[in-house]
Each structure stands twice: as structure tokens, then as C-alpha cells.
Length: 440
Ligand code: HAM
Image (cartoon, rainbow, N blue to C red; front, top):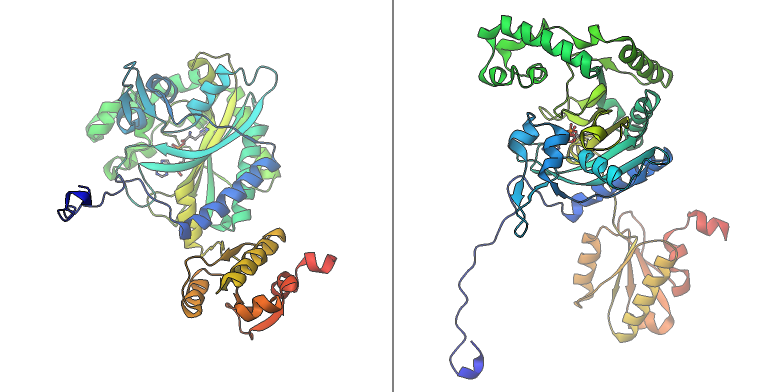
């Protein structure tokens, strides 16, 4: 109602605040600094190995994931966010992972026509899982793919690259590497028949899930956590014992390259991954520090995926890092990331405001972050904000300083007296040991 009607404005009804969707998290600035540290480190390491960034949509045709990931996987059977396009009625899905979309894009743009490609992307993925620590409905991955490489050298390269990233982040001693080979299609077919025969011999031990999967996806039964099935699973025939000569040579080549690079690994013959496109190499990096959701990165080779999605035969290998799990691991290791400014400038009066802003620009010219207080208030209240900002120094500009073109520099994080310096010397006063100063 406009006030011109003469009646007092009606009180607005109190509105209940909305909350984020369950399993989808906000990342607030305090936590985001660590995300940025991880992102910076990952970007830098990937580019050291010649991997280049690409971006694909978050929404793809549902058929891409059904064909790419496999109809009988948990992801496709029960975890996808799928909806119909309002106009066309086409079934669309929020990407539950990135590999299928990247391969779709590579086929669509003939990306591997002239040469193989090393690519990576970062972004959110969506899976309707039961949320718990380390498992969310919107989560983030760094996804890395080498498209058009038959390996095993490139399989090893990706693992060595991850080992470098863990060292870079200071978490190498908390993560171990498990590798396995799940062979090629015909080896898997033969193994599958052996497995079904084994599980059928022990049909009475199978839980409901396993019975349902027995013929559709017996490999996934190996992943079961049901305690009463563990002994029977341990006796199941192992594919790694029955690899043909080419798959065997591939696996031995990978193991040899990892040993040459000094990377410790365990061979886990039970390691099967939750997505159906893999063949030969599969691997996971696992930590014991995050409870049940301990796999911080996983991947492997998917030589058949291009063809399954209508492209030319193109061997490929890749992995994804779970960003939230890495953040939990980093936090557990006591990692912090500083994004506090070097200086917080407090000021009072027009002339002082002008000097404050020009000081801040001078500091930024030297490559340091500076925040100029906004919103007025007494010096005392401004100093409280300076402290809360995490800045190393408060710079104080009052009318006297403005008139004399000086600034008072007060250390906030270490003992030291406040001292007045000429405005032009403010950067040197805060960074006495910086290489920039030594060079000048
Ligand atoms: P994935 O094993 O399904 O593989 O996921 C990779 C990583 O993403 C997991 O190891 C985990 O750290 C993280 N992750 C998965 N689901 C969740 C969740 N609900 N909440 C939090 N983190 C999660 C893939 O996605 C493959 N596309 C990897 C790949 C790339 N293979 C070849 N190229």
C-alpha cells in the first residue's frame, strides 16, 4: 500500500527463511579460502603435466548417462536428478559425473581428430544419495581425462600427477593407492560367468541386493558390505588371476611405471568401481581419516566409452577427485589458508578518506591486498573491524596524517609499536623483507 492512501502501512507478515536443499551445501568465505588453495594447487599441478581446462554443461540428455555409466549402476538406477524439458519434453539430467559429458563433447567437436587430448574440468556433480559426512547430493570434483591414449604410460602419469598434488597439499602420508585390472570385455564376460556360477553355488548366502544383481551386474556384488557375505566374496574367482596376455602386460606396465616413479601401491583384486565404463586399469586413493567415505579420488581406463556413445574407438583414461572429501582431509590435517588482507585502512574525514583510498591502490599496485573501511564509525569501531578482517596491519589516517601526508602503521598480529611513516613509504613499512624491496 502506498502511504498516500493515508492509512498506516500494513505490517508485513513474517516470512519463514528458506534453507538450502538437503545435501547441498553453501561454502562460506572462511571455508572457501581452503577451497581456493586446493583449486590453485590442482590447477598448477595439472598444467605441469600438460592438461588443459575444458568446460561442459551441467545438464545433459539423460540417455548420455544411461548409455555411458550403465543402466544397472546405482547412479543411473537411483541417484540421478532427472526431469523433462518444459518445451521439448526431452528427458534431461543434472550430471552425476563428468566423464560421459566430456566424451560427448570430444565426439561432438572431433577433439581427438588430430591428436590425443589431456583435459580437466572442475565443477559440481549431482547424485541423490543419502547425505552424510563426505557424501552430498551436490558435490564437487576435479575431473581429469586423457583422451586417445592407449597407456599404460598415461595411466601411470595420472597417478604420479595425483601423488604430486598430495605432496603439494601436505596430505601424502594420509592417503594410500589401490589399483586393480578389471580386464577387457571378453575377459570380463568369462569372469562374469565364473562369478555367477560361484554366487549361484552360494545362493542362500546372498542378500536381497545381491540376488537382484546376480545376473544384471554380478561384479558389483564384490562391493557388498554385508558381513555374512564376506567369506563367500573372498573365495570368488578373481579376474586379475585370469587376465589375457594384453591386459596382463598393460597391468604389469602400469605397476612397473609406478615402481619406477617411487609410488607405493597395493593391488586390490576386489577393487571394482561403481560406473560401468571401465576396463583394465582401475584405481582409488583412499584415506582412513574420513570414516566410511574414505575414497578421495578414483578413476581408471575406459577404452570402450567413445564407441558406446557413438564415436570412433578411442582409448582413454581418467579420474576424479572429490573436492569436499579433500577439504575434510585438509582440515583434519590442520591446513589453513590465509586470504586476509595485508592492510585494513581506517580513516576519518574527507581528506583522510581520499588519502586512504590512494594508499590502498598503492598497496595493490605492489601486489598486496588492502581493504579500505567503508561505512563510517569511530576509530575504535573501525579498529575492531580491522582486527576482525584478519589483516596484518591497520593503517590509520586521520586529519593530521592527511595534512602531513603520513600514515600510522599498527601491527595487528605481532607485537610492535604503532609508527608514523610517509605515505609513499607505506608498502615498505609493512613488508621490510619482501624481495620487491630488496630488488629496488
Ligand atoms: P566416482 O568414483 O564416482 O568416479 O567419483 C569420484 C570421486 O568423487 C569419489 O572418489 C569421491 O571422492 C567423490 N564423490 C563421489 N560421490 C560423491 C558424493 N555423493 N559426495 C561427495 N563426494 C563424492 C567418477 O565420478 C568418475 N567420473 C571418475 C573418472 C573420471 N573416471 C574416469 N575419468
